[in-house]
Length: 142
Image (cartoon, rainbow, N blue to C red; front, top):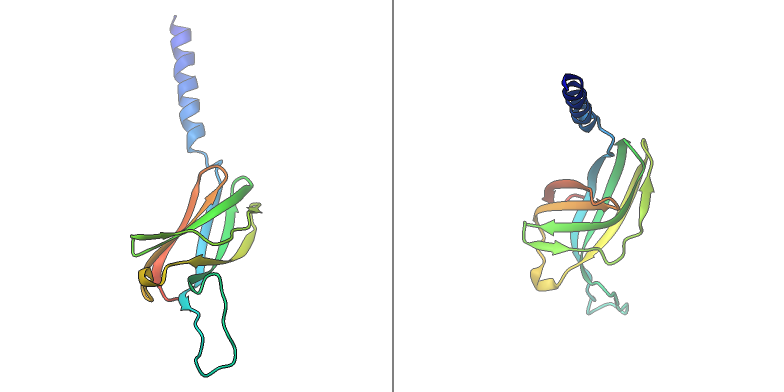
């Protein structure tokens, strides 16, 4: 009976120790550029601007995989001033192995009345396992 209790204690201790070892991926996001853009026509120009997203936030970021297992990112989100939550108009899924870095260029469409030119932001990259990699700051960043 004492041997069973001792074995149970050591198995529980081993499980606890294994939870502390970082098997999961360590991801860093660095935003290199974020700015609001409103594309419009110049009334004195012969060029007409047509865009499916004339009012938008343009984000450039570097996503780095520092250590852990390979991971694949399936989506991204942008939150402006803790109230306006946006999705990109197009997101190409990408995978990162440990030690790799990817430059990401995304367009987040927004309705013109809701847009702000300066403020706080949070960008979140979501992987296929449901883990999130985030970056926060103030914009515009040029």
